[in-house]
Length: 156
Length: 174
Image 1 (cartoon, rainbow over the protein chains, first blue to last red):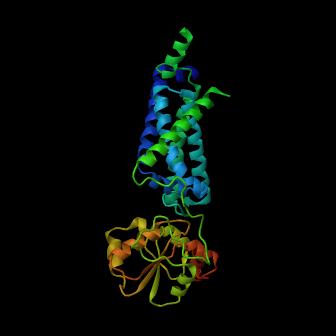
Image 2: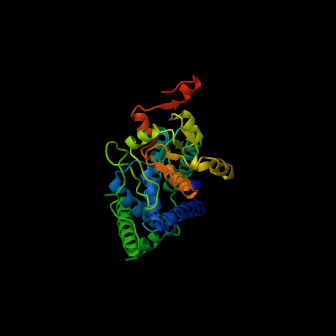
Image 3: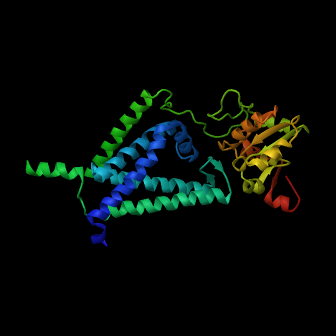
């Protein structure tokens, strides 16, 4: 299994997949921080004064980590950041499913529509998390900017 | 310290600097420290969402809503999902679920009496459908629209008249 996951091409494909997903997801949030702040607020997990700060920094961190994971720059940090963020998202969604919060509007709701939308989000994040974990297992370090600097340092 | 952790910190520091720089460079960026409500209150002014704008229908307190509830010329409208409405709603309220509005609903809304007043509410925990439905009705030509943003939760917490799924099954209400 480790050998399969360490395949250079598979690792590169996973890096691109995860990186593009996070870059794509961050663009709209970076363009509309006010709307994303409302979404953060709807989770009812952060104190009010941290909502805007989180809405500003988190999408930018997603974007930069997405670029880093594709290019292989600060690779381990970017990969682990995306994993941590995915776990945080999943816990936040799970907590709100249990609390009965409709994440679309931030309302407390018993509707099955709201619950199934949240469960779909959870399932999607689980897939991303598995891909991220595959990158942790992979030993492949080809086509990474980090390698370029490491090899230069080794030569020096 | 682990190498990956240092890298992660570098990413976060770069992200913070970039995010704050872009926000300050952009005209109309958001305030860094947000002014978000910490929940519904009673006994103070009406609960008003941060997204309220000038020209919105007036927001009413729980006390105002209770006073209006006594009037035969005021109808309460619940803007939540039908499932939430069935589970429990303010007694005698109509259900117009904002997220389901379509042409059929427009016909129904058109048939409502324009001379009556309407108090719109939703779940109360910063749910915005009451605000959106209130605006929609206002734009539709209903002059007496009020938004009770404290909503279902504040009403229920204060032991006011409600109809729940169990009680409506037995034909009873609180």
